[in-house]
Length: 349
Image 1 (cartoon, rainbow, N blue to C red):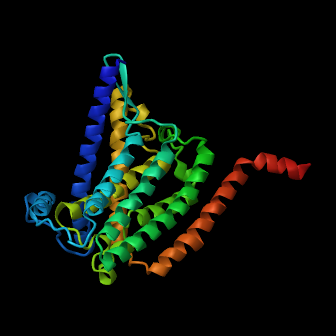
Image 2: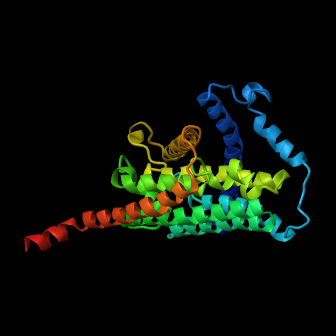
Image 3: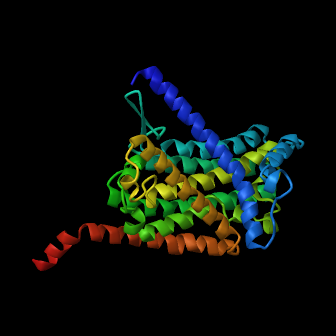
């Protein structure tokens, strides 16, 4: 493939993934209000457009038109960097996700993955860890004690659950033998989904994903009853919108990562019996992946409007006293299973 063609294709893929991410994040707000309305026997938004489908557009216009305020006692540079960093890191995580296999045009194969790096898992965790700084900087730069308290709670929560999440992924790396996200997805052809091999690791990862995205029942950083508004109390207009967008983008990316790591990614059993053209197979894989992602987003919303919020001591106890020991136990059990023949030979001898 010519270098110019490769660069143009990658740029198109980057723009396409970014646009889809932003549209899904925007309409996730509408979907959440509709799901909440259904679970609470309400209608949800139904005024802006048919069935309220223009409500996200109205919300975006409202955020743009609201007065932009920056507290006089704040650190103005960091006050602006905070929400920008949160949104940037949220968008950066999608570059290593394999959205499908590849498309063939004019004798060339075009991969549906922006960057197939062989240390994709390390890249994901590195970007996620940087996202903590966006919240911490925003809370500290506001020079507001409620914002600072919310930022401290958010950062300690996210750092604590990153430990358990990282340990749960170690067991997955042991079974797959790779750090490449693309390779992990490719290995799950047919029914060889990692959820069947690592059920405990998947459960730990999903619980940690709720804490990492600050979603209920782990939404302590934005606990309005205790913190007024959390780390973004002093923010308004689109700076506030950046934080809100980052949360919904993180939810979308978390559902994508969970689907890719544990639920087969773009793989779907038996589809090869009905579809034989490689391009159509690739497009079906993209459709299957997004179906899993949309179910994952619905699951995030379902849990939010079903379970009550944890107390902060319960949150930290769950992370440090339950999930981390379970993650270590899962690593030990995985290692013992992989070395079962050697262990049996030792006992037999």
